[in-house]
Length: 148
Length: 119
Image 1 (cartoon, chains in turn brown, cyan):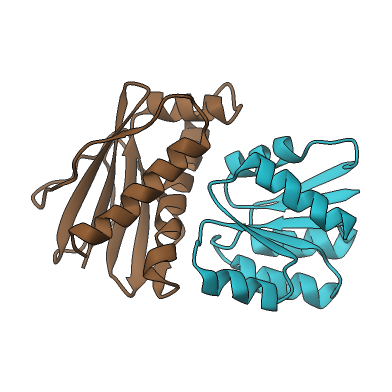
Image 2 (cartoon, helix red, strand yellow):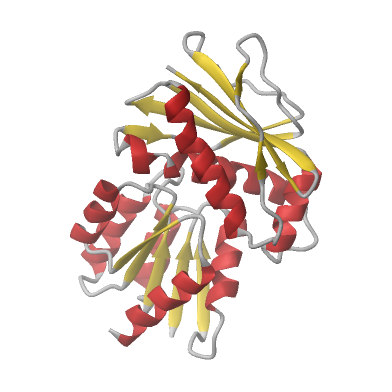
C-alpha cells in the first residue's frame, strides 16, 4: 500500500458523502501516517482485508456526524444500534468500493463495530497506518487504512 | 407486487424501501441474512428481490444461486459495495437481472427497478 493507493480510498470517501446530497462538500485533509496509535472516535466500523492485501480498513466517527448522515437518509430518531449499523455500513461501502481499483482479490470481511475506541480487532503489526481526516458538516471522522 | 429486500444493514433496507415506495408494491419483506432470504423467497416467490453480497453467514452470491434454483425466472437486483467488474459479471452470469453499486443513488435504483418490472 503506497500513497497512490490511498487515493482510491479518498475517491470512495468523496463518492459516499456526495451521495448524501447534503449540499455541503466533504473536506478531506491531507492523509498522514501514524503507526504508533489509531485515532478511534466514538463509533468505528472495521473491515478485515485479506487476499491481495492484509489488514484492516476502518471508518471512525462521533455519534453527531452519524446522526447527521442518518438525517440525510431520512432516518429519525436515531438509536445507538442504528449508529453502529451505519458506521459498519460506511466502512463496508468504502472498502468494497476500493475493489474498483484493486480487483476482486481484495477480499473484505463483514463489518465489526467498536464503540469508544474499544476494539478487540487485531490490527496488523506490519505495514503502514494511513489516516485520512474527513470533515463534513463541521464534524470530523477518519478513515484508517492499515494494510500491507 | 411483492418485494424482498436483503441486506445485513437495517439502515440500508429501510432506505431501499423508501426509495422504491410506490403504488405498484403491495407487500415488502426484509431479510438481514441470506438464509432468511431463501426461506422468505421460497415461501412467497417475490416479484423482485434486491440483494446485498457481503453479509454474515450465507453471502449474497450463494443466496442468489439458491433463489435462482427455486425460480430460474427470479428477478434479482444485486446492490453491493463491491465495485469491481468481475463481481458484477459473476452476479449476472449466476442469474442476477441487474447490478448496482453502493452508495445507492435513489434515482438509479428506481430506474433499475422500473426496468426490472417492465421486463
